[in-house]
Image (cartoon, rainbow, N blue to C red; front, side, top):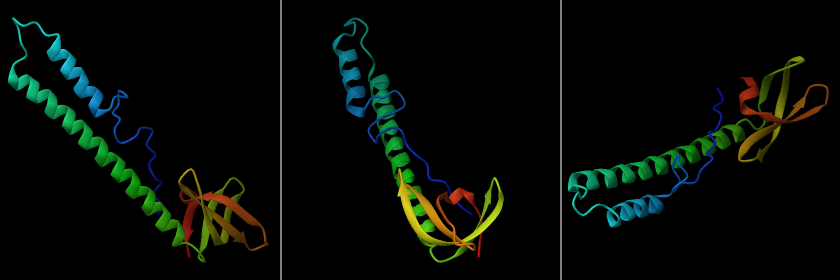
Length: 133
């Protein structure tokens, strides 16, 4: 069974708002600089915000590592198909062919198949494979 790799649109130091950890810390520093001296932020609230930012950075790092792991798994899975006969489901029906090459497009593995009538089919994704023989 094929597992499609997950793509990430942001880097490891980015969160959903497009700010890195240093920018978030700068926001806290600015908040402390311009706070009302008669109503300071209490220590618990300040430490809680820092912990949330730290957890956000760790979650993003973990997400990036899992994405990298899934890409490596897809590459290993694709190279394991070299020399094997696979079946594909296509618009014209089921197609069988021997995997002769693996290439990578945008980090995604693509298979090249040699079918029985001598034709070569290239650019096949792992998700299109329905059976491996």
